[in-house]
Image 1 (cartoon, rainbow, N blue to C red):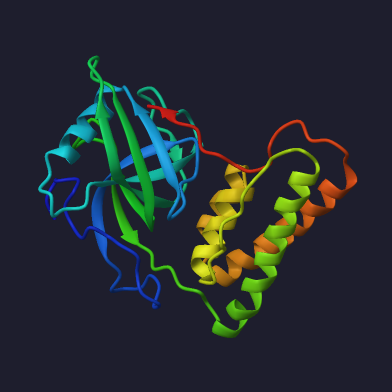
Image 2 (spheres, rainbow, N blue to C red):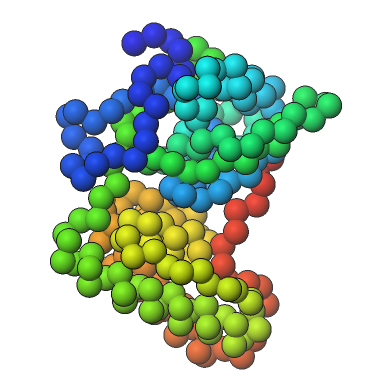
Length: 247
């Protein structure tokens, strides 16, 4: 393996076998953040630190047939900005560039989308100004088919009830789109929509399969609905939104 941080497979959603001895591995640039990126979730970023400007420039210089992506890993302890290396969580998600705007002062405005989960095996902090991770890509699978089929309609119903309660409390008006029947997609949608706490969202990202994630989300939604039923007003919206992160 070379020192190129983009060396190795481009990633992509895995099959039903999960991570094993044959799982794809790669070296990818790392972008530590104070948030958790989930597959399918849009993440805007403001990039101003020189090391991350270099990362973006290197991605843009890649051939068009290669995935322009980097790994987003939530920070366990430490800061996003500065020279000190933060302590990172073990499970992250690749971010694929969707839109890039370069400003006259050298900053970049990025729009990325979460794509593939990965397990962080080691971190190289010497070969580039930014961190480079040795990662194993993790397949997303539903888990037990019967359990997944039973969990999907329950979570869909609870999410609709949760949105209705928010609207009734004048907290937030949401036009809920058609909810996916695919358990993996649904599990990530719920995690993105109703889990603002980083630690809990990280637990959902690291869940072994969609069934485990959906079961945890059932408990969460029932708890949130019960809380909404007990109060008369809400000071702020309950749906989690990821703000642009200044890096």
